[in-house]
Length: 197
Image (tube, rainbow, N blue to C red; front, side, top):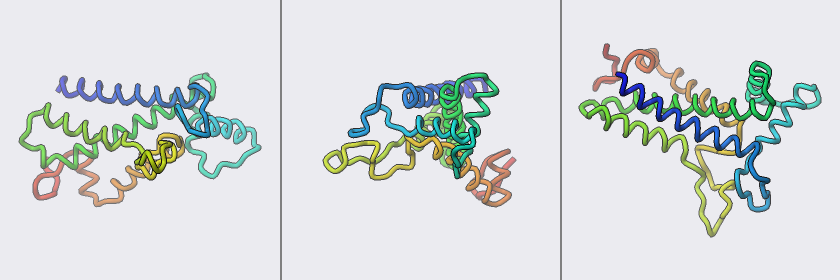
């Protein structure tokens, strides 16, 4: 049990550090060249400015959840809005990673039933990591700018989308049957797709 806990802590710590690094450079990184979108192109700085305008009453934001969370973090921890944006975004992404990890683990429980612990964890972590960090699909000769990728399940420049993804996954999981909800919270599926104790 201790080994399992350590394995997960190491994985989630790595994911948090990766998220923190990304969001830090989106806020305090080198100047972004918006012609080529080099470095850490993002609209995070614009959203930080929206926070200031929103709470001054000069701007309306139709989707203020991220902005409100950042402001609460800033006030509660007594840090600047910029630092609160980095921490809030990193924690939201960590929450997303944890949710994806456990959903993958539950969905693969039958396929990994008779495997060793290390094999199970490795497969679950590789799949969860792939789901979480896959980037935009870029065809270099067609669109060489990764910021303007053809499509991606993970848009790495949009903080408001980061906020919605965990909530969307939770709503999908919770909109299923009571049995599925019970299994995700307290147990796992057996080969007959019902919960076992």
